[in-house]
Length: 136
Image 1 (cartoon, rainbow, N blue to C red):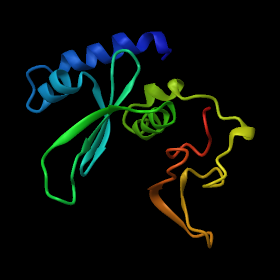
Image 2: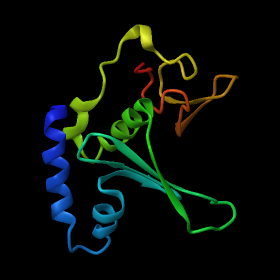
Image 3: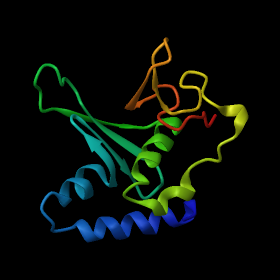
């Protein structure tokens, strides 16, 4: 899929959600399709190609309040990367990986690595958002 095709792809997915239980949230509040979600957080792809994060405002305090924010380019690429398991057609939207852009924090793995070298699978590197490389 090319970036030019994102608009039609997302709009078609959004249209298919109309009227479904829970689907109105994505259509009306966020205006995008779910890329992935976890407790207190979700990432959505909008028709214009931007990625929106929905984050719990005060998770530790027990609040049910959420805020929306636009992801950075690095975060957006990480969110798309996470979604590829469910939406493989988005693979072509990822920036090309170049050896000179390898993330020095995770050593190109995309995962969290402690100072002693122990890697924790399933925990993303904060610097590269799970890609293993920087896009800027």
